[in-house]
Image (tube, rainbow, N blue to C red):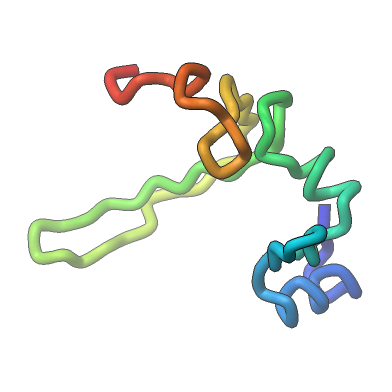
Length: 92
C-alpha cells in the first residue's frame, strides 16, 4: 500500500501515530488506506506477513521465517469500536 521512502511513508514516520482530537483525528495514513484498503475493520481479506520467531529458554530470539498471507478479521476489536458481545471469547 505504501512504498518505502515515498511521500506517504515519510509523513507516516514523521507523525508516528494517529492523533484523536475532540472534533476529529489526524490520521497516520490517508483515509483511503486507513479506512479501506489497509483497514483493521472486519472485512477482507487483507494482505499480511506471518513471522515465525523462535525464543530459546535463555530468551534469545531467532527469526525462523516470514511469508505472505491473507488475513480476514471476523469481528471488530475493542479499539475499533466493537462491542464485547461481538468479540470472540478468549477460548476461541
